[in-house]
Length: 221
Image (tube, rainbow, N blue to C red):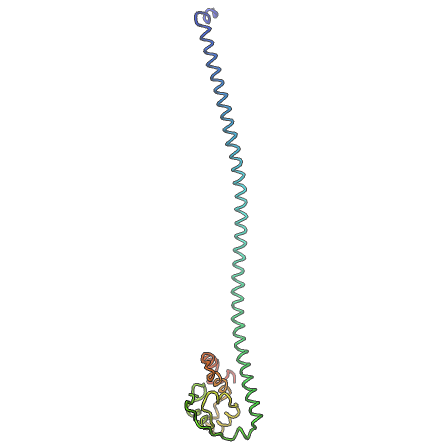
């Protein structure tokens, strides 16, 4: 019965065509599967390479972040050290200015002492008449010297800053003592130093020195 169904005119040809179609489909499927595998393998390999590169770059990024954080910390510490060093420099500059002032004062006192020992007390007490120069200095620029004391200085021959700078402090005190009790309260210790700066035209240093003084006297004197 079945044989009669599958046998007959054209049955063999139909079966052959069916087999050919199945074989073609099978070959196409296998080719598609092979091509898919090739493509999958290729892209999978590329994915693995890209993922490995991503992991490597991520590690490099983390190392760079650590290095950046370390450098930023070092920068902050350097800025702190720089600020501390700047404060120390300013403090040292202030100390140097104070020491320079003390040195200048010691040199002035030493010069006055040497002049006093050379000339002697009698020579210091003797009035010296010096004619006024064509352009006498304004001695009132010196803090502690007013119009009256300027007249006293002129009376003993002091008309210029240079002359005042070379006058011993003891000589100035004798001048004030001889002028009476109203002048004895004046303290001439800083006058020669101020006059020396004025004679040299060092007005900024003179202003700084006078700001340091109190009524023409050294603080604490």
